[in-house]
Image 1: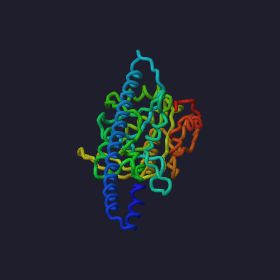
Image 2 (image 1 turned 90 degrees about the vertical axis):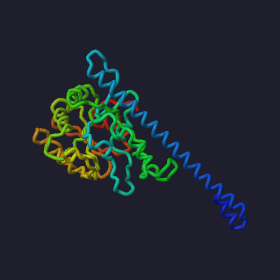
Image 3 (image 1 turned 30 degrees about the horizontal axis):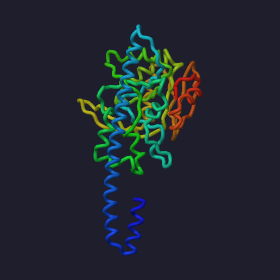
Image 4 (image 1 turned 45 degrees about the horizontal axis):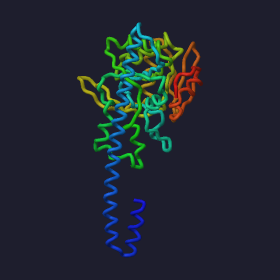
Length: 315
């Protein structure tokens, strides 16, 4: 196009209509070819990412089998990431509303990027074949996404189409808590997103995990306080009906503070960081806090060292 368009202008000025027509036709086919190649490339990239997700889940399954079996030694270091199921890839580490500070990657995508090779990050998954497994593929083929890898605004879609995430392990309700306890004790570090996504006064599974960690393993817990934002998530409304709704993250945080206080765990009140996340540890009544930008979330050795942890990942 960089060649054809100037030629079209020259041919138009000179009145060379035949050559102008040839350039117009050639430009049309170049655009079609470019879009076709772009769509094929995007489809292959999404399929490769989907395969990577399957491999991560297989690694998580094997790790859980090793952890829960007394006969199998644990050879790999790993980190555990805890968050409500309803907030899968729904929370961001940078405000999407502030001009010049846009972040199109979810918080757990940023975290997962930093844990590779000798260290694996895992989380729990509610359903094995859940929407997030094929969501990028579905979105790419829908009318909502009219983009290819060559479009100027493709970066806005990369976080949705080609997202990274932790390896996920599906646990039944009967085995969830015993599995969680074993994983928490064996993990090098446990990342906690302490927010309450429930719609009533029930004490959610995420909050149960936090109470156990505060009693038994507070020295290895890293709490994450993202910037305030409108969080869109699917939640049950009764009668088996699910609907998407928007809730302020600060409201869910304060709900967790209230419920955890009743159970003897004092969580700091929400303080908006506007951009980046506040990470903190709470051990023996001492709170250690560091500010981490979205890009720094992919370098765990840096912020974990500032929080007092040793070398945890292999970047």
